[in-house]
Image 1 (spheres, one colour):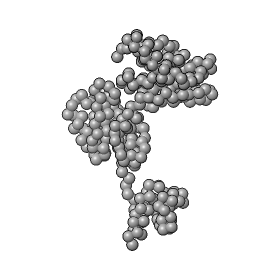
Image 2 (image 1 turned 180 degrees about the vertical axis):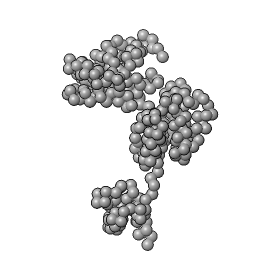
Image 3 (image 1 turned 90 degrees about the vertical axis):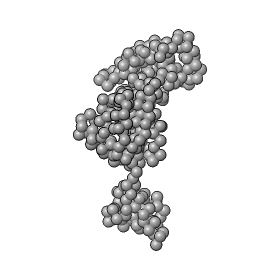
Image 4 (image 1 turned 45 degrees about the horizontal axis):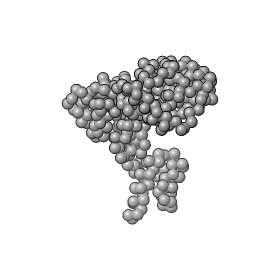
Amino acid sequence: MNIAVSDQSLLRQAAQAAAGGQQYPAATLYLVATPIGNLADLSLRAIHALSVADALACEDTRQGAQLLRHLGLHKPLVALHQHNEREASAGVVARLAAGERVAYASDAGTPAISDPGAVLVQAVVAAGYRVLPLPGPSSAVAALSVAGDTAAQGFAFAGFLPTKTGERRTALQALLAVERQSQVVFEAPHRIAELAALLAELAPERRVTVCRELTKQFETVHTAEAATLPGWFAADAQRLRGEFVLVLHARAPVAASADSLPEEAQRVLALLVAELPVKQAVALAAQISGESRNRLYDAALQLKQQRDGA
């Protein structure tokens, strides 16, 4: 997607009008979220920050140069990627010491989310300089928003699973065992069929949202039980292409009975439930016994129902 010179000027003017009123202090690192596939997702504030930056540090200088070219901007580029992040961070800190504004952008999405950036932030903060986020595109958040996981009480970001078969299975089993949380996983096209087969084996009834090529022309979002995923991928070879984000929907908690708790925890919980509201009883029982609040809560509800029905 190329933007005409006149449109570049209008875009920068719009960015100035929308975001120019905010202060952009010198000697500051700006973390700029960049599009994950659709250039139109770049925020006006990000455009303005790039325009006032003295330099752009980026995961890939070719990508950084292309982004600036789209906007009609020219800035010194600093390569900062996973193989040189510590060394390159020192150069960024030196620029900040000279009073410069430095923007950092990974190849796509939000820096430091399965991308370089965390080491840079740590180095800048340790040197006593400010780091300001410019929020924007994130494939993990985009996938969560369309998953519709109503059972989730929060989420965890797992990123890419290990590539070795045994480690991969172990890591996935651990994710699937977590209760009440959505789990966000990235996957490469050459391994997506293998991951689908493993999910179908380990958790056939678990709902999974598969997001392919988010924000791009051939974007696909498909939610189904894991058991059906191998067949869904096999039905169309195009479904195996592109970049993937998967949301493993939250696992419902396994109901605990009072009898499944250690004897001392049972005794403590029973005494507290008899005298206090359930939430307060569970909180105190967890402090006293060290048992999981989730297990104690399920058991407390069972005790309360037994007592009320007596």
